[in-house]
Image (tube, rainbow, N blue to C red; front, side, top):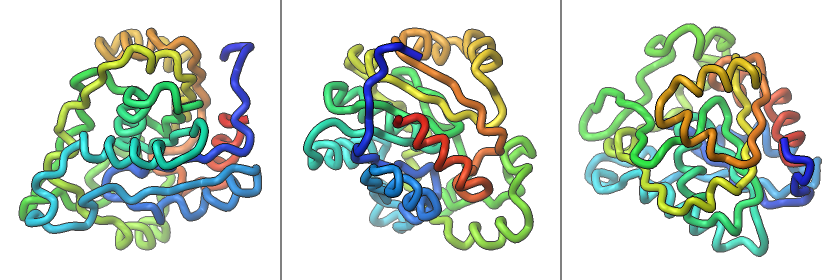
Length: 240
């Protein structure tokens, strides 16, 4: 972490959900950010929950554009928080507005490289529905108990078919000057830095960031549902 770290007290914080989630996925996080003096702004991205007839043309660039529009509607610098696939969107917006973004916080995900994708999931009726908790490896869901699974699965919504496999376009190397915090579920800083160095272009992208820190949450992949207080406190600390 840089000794010259910028203070982000009282900032607008744009909260970008991961796949299948909307603005309400941040409901348990918003009050803590407000109590810390920030203005949280959770987003629902274009085409989430929409049928293929309305969402087939929507790609990752449209999601990035939606966040950029929110940045442009804000006076002064903002912080971006991206969970999972929302991290790709956050990094794309930081690339588009590096002079406006005070920090990017990645929640159990990492900065993508130019041309990188989120992942691939089954397409049903022209959209990608939530595949169910059993689709994911235990490392992603081990702290989701039965009650939490039952409560959260009905809140998920489909995403446009193109979004997860659309390559992200990153063009401005000034993004590497935007401070970054990675809130990782299972990896501490030493373990992450050792691992990412073996991940090809992901490692190259991360190594180019001038000011990056890694914090272990000791959670699975959806801490906003399983450990919201821990995640909220970690976000406040990242924005201190």
